[in-house]
Amino acid sequence: MIEARDLGCKGFVPSDVEEAAIDGMKKLVATDGRLTDVELEAATFLLYLGHDEHLPGGFTEEVLAAQRPAGGWALDSGGTQEPSSWHPTALAAWYLMESRPSTGSRPTMVPRC
Figure (cartoon, rainbow, N blue to C red):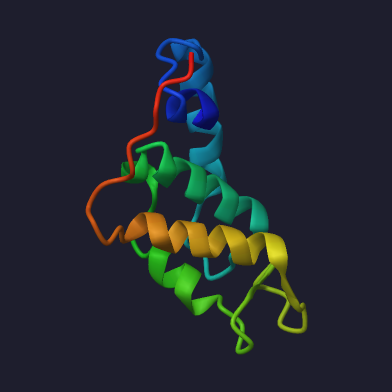
């Protein structure tokens, strides 16, 4: 879905498939004081695809609160001894950049379909 949208391929992903994917991602995101890699990935994709209305209030604050003292994010913030990992750290950076774009818009992608 992300690649199809970025490449300007309208109708490439059937609407029922996209709706099912969005519904599945919505179920993965919560504000329960614990942030997981899968939850962060779902939230990042929802935000990037323009479905930020499905993110619970306070989610961005939860992402910020889950940052480790060294600057990264762990696979599961519930494990206080768990070290930072590259994947949730990259997702958190992407999520935070998408949630507060400096220009208010994304760069234009050239259709390639």
